[in-house]
Image (tube, rainbow, N blue to C red):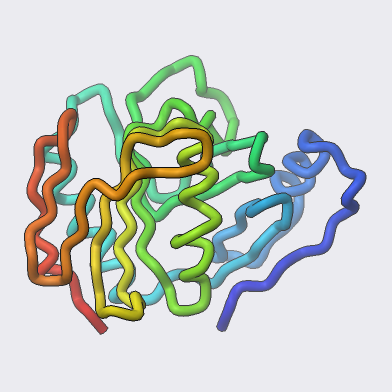
Amino acid sequence: MSALTVSHDPEQSWDELVRFWEEMEWPEGSKVEIIEGIITVSPTPAYRHNVIADRIQRRLYSAIPEDWAIFQTLAIAVPSRLGMLIPDLLVTPIDDEWGGEDSHIPGAVAELVVEVTSRSNARHDRITKPAAYATAGIPLYLLVDRWAPSGPTATLYGEPKADVYRVLSTAKFGEPLELPAPFDLTLDTGEFPAS
């Protein structure tokens, strides 16, 4: 099953769009995001997708401070890009002021976001989401692309300026990938299932 989109009124304000996204009854287990102002409903990621996210999450726990967290279902708001994005992994300091019943946090507070491509939405992970994450000023973006034309790769992006990241490093599956400070962590991409 591939993603589907939900039409909305182009005259709708950002706040109205977010309210619709928060209050609508979406299919259980689906991932619902606002991508460039369009509500996108995606199916639950496949098993191998989740294995990769799990392997990365396990390694990250050894590198983050106690007052940071790793989330799999928390949305990042990037209003200037009309985005309410749910990365596969989101690493951020914990801050009680975000609290309450909010289903999202400001994108600017994230330290790292990780996306693992699915065949049906790889374009979003390669183009649309990095532009939004860079706009939000998120220092690091890790794209694990099982469907890359040149073969499965993991690419670390950083140094965001406007809506563009610089490629910091790329590793084919099987090669190590270094995450810089504040993580100072080497990921073994050989642990990632390629197909």
